[in-house]
Amino acid sequence: MYKNDPLFISDEMAKFNEGSKNLTRKVHGAQYPDAIDPAGNNDNVHRLLMSSELGVIYGYRDEMARPIPGKTFSLDEHISVLPEKTARKWFNADSVFVYDLPVDDPYRGIYNHCTGVVITKKGRTGFMLKLYFTDEGKKNEKRYLQALRKAIWYRDTEWKYDREDNKRAIRKHWDGVSE
Image (cartoon, rainbow, N blue to C red; front, side):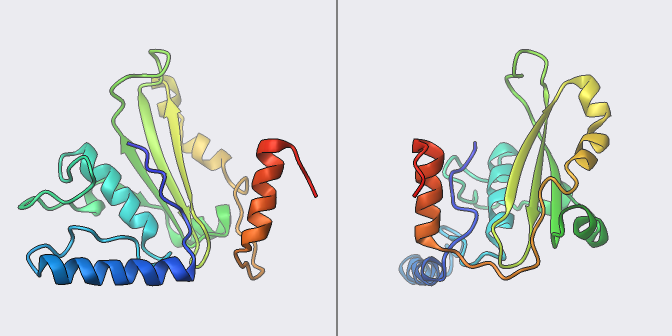
């Protein structure tokens, strides 16, 4: 299960999500508090995505990533968080989450280990990576994670989403067109 949800949402979408969540709770009542709980802001979107992904894999959520009644899922049991100092030094990030995912159908028959990595910084879009390893590669996983250092780096300057700039970048990437 690999979701295509946005990793950064606009202020307008955050307001819409909050209204949607409130309406759902009003319609379904308190017995259904997490039935539809869209990411209301950029601070929790990555945690919700990891929780949904792992919850479905381990049987705590259904195929639509909704919680299964009576089952509780603890992220702390499945996710490691790099120390804040390491996150800053490696990526200039606030948080880095690392977790193992089962591989049912190994790629090329040998890549039978998968590690999820989520790199986040408050107010910025996050990065969700999936790293696939052979048995030998898994033994060197820490070295491969360290090799990512500074390959992804959050700038310290203020960043604002620019819809037109995003459209130009998409056109340039997909069509080879620049303005």
